[in-house]
Amino acid sequence: MKIKSKQYKRLKDQHDYLKRKVKELTEDRKKDRSTESKTLLIRLKKTKLALKDALAKAKAVLTKQ
Image 1 (cartoon, rainbow, N blue to C red):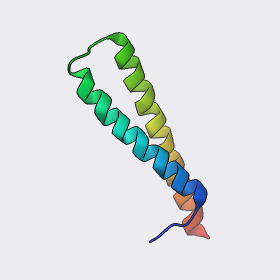
Image 2: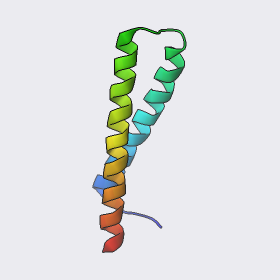
Image 3: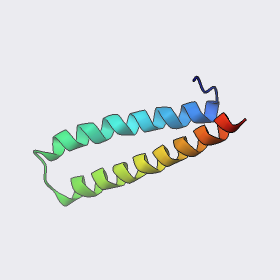
Image 4: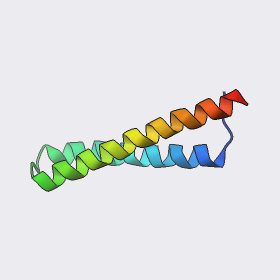
């Protein structure tokens, strides 16, 4: 199923970007165990999760139509 929505695509692009950043920071975290890196990683993970929820909601609305 192909979903054609600019808002959905924008959310998907942001989610993909955050996915790459979280993966990168997780690898960096093996070397840098500071609290700053942990708080940044947690904040990015929470943002990524919020985007994932928004994607699911947008997908549900678009597939209903």
